[in-house]
Image (tube, rainbow, N blue to C red; front, side, top):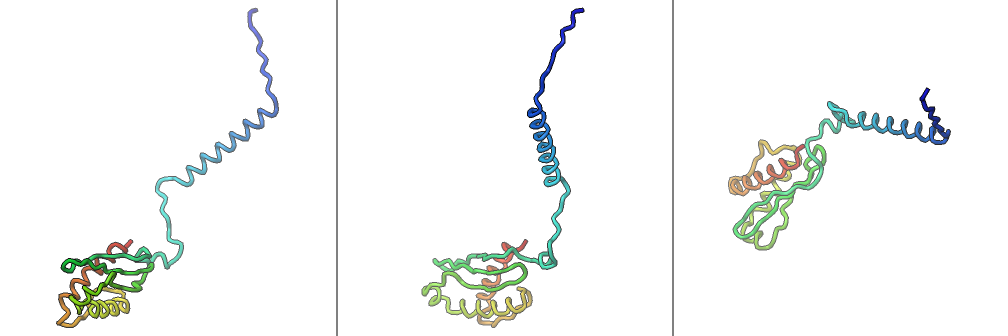
Length: 146
């Protein structure tokens, strides 16, 4: 008989380490599978998030007025338009376009109270100024939409 007997000596410490690493590996793989499984959709945590229209923040859109550039700045939270401003409104712009700030103030008041840019009223003498401002406000709100 020419069979050679091999004796394998395992220490208990090595067996325990191997078992622990095997269990940790299985846990890690199952965690990855659970976290990154396909078809997972995040449900909104509350009804407030379901009604959210905007990503909260401050969004801008620019208007070119001659050689000057003015930014219309719209501040929104998750479901409300909070404020609308002109930034930076220099003295040159105020002097050359005196209807700009009053027209924006009127539009901002209407938009913040109705939370919509539809069916707004403006004076006939500020019609073109209001239309240009309204276009910039809508552009900024499109950036804020989810």
